[in-house]
Length: 412
Ligand code: MCU
Image (cartoon, rainbow, N blue to C red; front, side, top):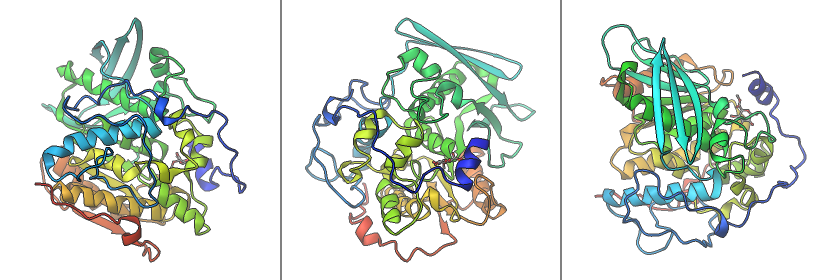
């Protein structure tokens, strides 16, 4: 994390406004939309307009279909609503998630799972290290981007994912580098986070066909911290086979809202915003460059990214001492996420815990009881209190009526 720690101690940005992106993506109407639905999308969902005109300074209503008409009112309708959110996030920010490739094969030896993927005449191979508890399984396991920075008890396995090998994240000039781009071309619209999430999907494909790994397919978690926390959140959003998603200090670009990060900046805070993030690194698609200076024109913000995880387990860990990560922004954004879980009747499956006075990515012991509850409930079939919304700071300037003006339906 040396590069991160530099960025964190003295956050990357200069005091002057960043120059506008040099690569300007085509307008939204012409960005690729041919990827088809995410794998769980039913064929019967309404088409998403190719041209969208949108303006809302508040967090967009996650229950409102983009084509207009009535807000959704049933849990059954959430399937298409979630698919729509997925398509919009791909179109505006993340780039296209390719559908399942033509071939995925795997082999497992000495704790290393080697995954071979072929699609449209090209092939790549990558490997993950798996450690599982001793004894007879199958065991729950957590896919950890770059290795875990939360304590993982020894009755849960760890799958270490070298996400940088899948898509580089050295700087703003790492665009198109890594195995994902060897397979799909360096000009593919997917940002690094989408490429990593695609990699997580292939890891789970490989686990499905490799029982020797001894991983319980119904009890898979994903985690990462900071930039890798942003990535872990995207992976949990895009794969319904993930039972528990734990983004740690993901901040702006992860569990924070673009709109609220801008608000923090308007209050004089030094916070990462959309125009900065696309300069700093390649986590997002080039599609996003067209929107970073007009985030109110985007029909999606990051409460809708966490909404894609719902109603599955989600524990969002944040740090009040990190102004740069958007401390108020993550708080407000996740208030909205919690309401979405509530609408789905699954409030207890989502937790938010924000504690300061520790280094970036250093898990504080005061959050242990909460983490343990999530691991017990979603990976170990145990119990614990997971209906959590906690911060050690009071955000008097968070005006919920202003930012979350929509009512919360009870979806039947
Ligand atoms: C929180 O994630 C990032 C942040 O977005 C960057 O601006 C900063 O430079 O690095 C953080 C990080 O990944 O730290 C490990």
